[in-house]
Image (cartoon, rainbow, N blue to C red; front, side):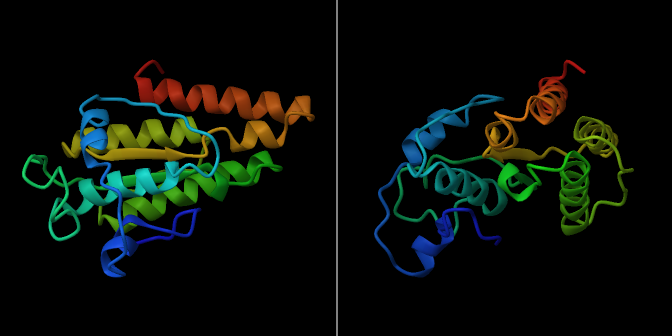
Length: 180
């Protein structure tokens, strides 16, 4: 499992026999929706919650969720999880940002042994192609996005780059919403 920005992952709690405050009831309520957005102040555990959701969808309930609220309630299948942490993408070079995004999608494709590739393009174009290819093989995925505003906050004083990132991120979300 990949490290998350806070340095902790949900599986660390299990493997280290650490104390875990069970938030699975709230997570269960949250993930009943097709799309969900939640925001909390920095350092309030958003990344760990996303990692918990990823673990649930990637692995199911065993072994990590034994003794949690969700254990006997979860009936979902497992799915590939596309984790997009915008902190991992360049915030000061638009072309590098696009390349970072492209590489992340192709790594996801490779990690899940999908038999297709995505051509290079802006993030929304790559995502659109990914969705089309997944539909053609009737494959569902889960997408988790962390630090979605990183490029915007980093460029608040650079209007040209800010506007370029803003347009790209707007197009990206339009594809996710099925509007582009």
